[in-house]
Image (cartoon, rainbow, N blue to C red; front, top):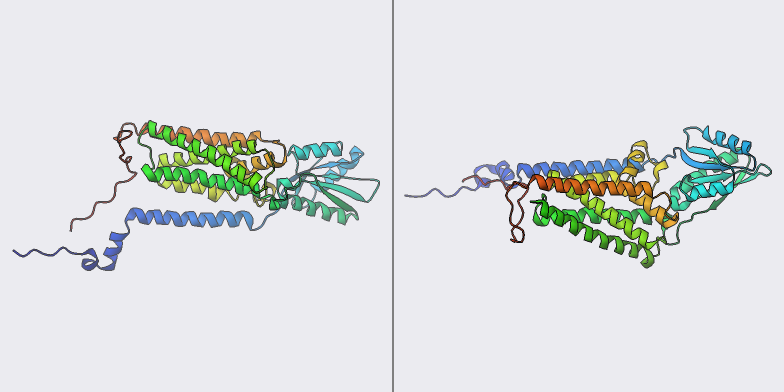
Length: 367
């Protein structure tokens, strides 16, 4: 009996059949997800950076006589669209201390006896921010027939162009965190098969975080001379940033499988990086990015890195609590997801077999 030759889907069904055979429904959905992530990336970055506008930048106002300081503060507070948030302080020493403590981003020292005032700025908190303060106050002084002398009391290091090194260091740590977690997923299944595997992954992530934090700090300074702050402080911060981002990624993977990597990128890169206060610190960002920035790892990390580098570690508590919260939340969710899979079959530890896949491949149609 003559057998019928095996039909090729490309020949029997034409191009559409071949396309369906080559690109599965799951692959098509993932491609659409990537497109959505890309568009969100463009929207977030362009939305945050296309029109920086100062809003309620905190500055101190001091003068030899208290009424003069209060009157000047009221005048600055009444500026259209409220670019400044001025507050009267007793003297220049108090104003300087508030800048160093990161309570304010600048200070105007008024001299009622003359026509020249002094403006204290801190480019270490972001060059674009200090320039905005200088421009706004300069316009006000000029309109009143006065001049202003600008003094940078917290200047950036010679190797830290525009004060962006802290931001890029933190971005590098964040990239390492989610890539490390993603590689752990790709190598043995996104969802850990059991609690033991979850603990191992978190342990590997911690070891990686310690190495990445130290090496990143050494590269930033002393190798490049970009960030002259405490290398021990930056090491600790880097370890926490990397581990927090990695733990978030592991948690998303535990909840959503491989798709969780995309969710981590959405949180950390799409929303986190443009709102981190790197190129434009918080007072220059639109309201949405200004609101979310301090609560996401890139923003908390960037603020903390600048505090360590230029402000003697002042005002670190908030950012460190945010990063610690993400690290703890990510670790707990990772282990809870692993505990929920305890009843599912998985290979014995040390067997060399891969963990249970996130989704079984589609069965080929019988031809």
